Image (cartoon, rainbow, N blue to C red; front, side, top):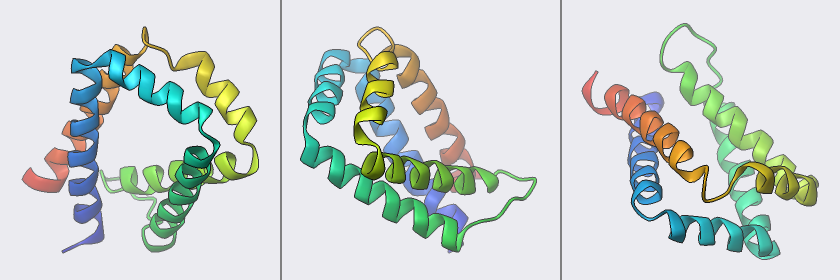
Length: 127
């Protein structure tokens, strides 16, 4: 199986699951995000995992092509940058995140996450 397809399938399942969860239970996800931002261990582990996942994708899938596969590369770079930011500048990132992640914005974020899940699902399972 092609790496692009595998990543698209995993991303589709994760994004759709989280997006639907955010849409159906905003209070839970608002509390979850608030709790994560207060938990330094969770932030560190999240940063470490994002760094590893991002670096792996950038190393093995750094393809800047004019097709949907560039989305996998972009996700990899975003994860890598997020991981570095969480490990090197955690307070700055938490401050930035708190300003735009709140219960009011969760509906918007859930729609974006579901849309990403549908795009990755289409290319990973259908196209």
